[in-house]
Amino acid sequence: MFGIGKGQMSAPFELFVAVIIMGFVILIGTGMLDKVNDQVCLNSIDKQITDFKLYLEETANKKSSTKFGFWPDNCFQESKAGINIQKKTSTTTCAAKCGKPTDSCFVIQFYSAELAGGFKEKCLNLPTYTSFYSDGENCFSSISAEDLDGYDAIDPMYGGSGDEPLKIRRGSYVIRNISAAGEVYPKICVYYHAG
Image (cartoon, rainbow, N blue to C red):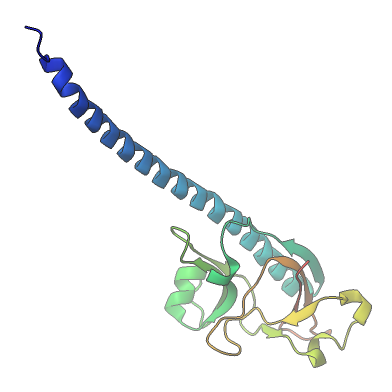
């Protein structure tokens, strides 16, 4: 009559089940928060890439110079991600990416393995024969050194030395169309400053 009741015997088991269920809820909740944070990060990157794209297109089309900051949220490691411009040379790819079945097109691309869904690509509305320069002979001959003090000319295209793509990094940029009057196709110089 004074022994342990059935309710008292099952209490430790019920507590154990409750702890397991709570653990799963915490695990799933943490996973959902990580996905939400990744999406917020990708939205920030998407906005910054769209701005970069618009500045580049405007500079190419108006034969102008544009200065701006490229500061996506600090939610990914730059060393493990890439943002660059690529030239695609397939009619099928250009039709899919840009909506025009041309022989070649330019896209600006972001990729990061550490973010869920960490790949964004946008078509650049640039003429097919747009050229990107990064050498001193082309990029620094038409301007005074004071205009770009602290800036380095970079090539935002995929390729360059080694296997790593040349990357667009966080910082300040100046994009200039250096094509001479009467030249049909843009010649673009991109200057970068870390600050």
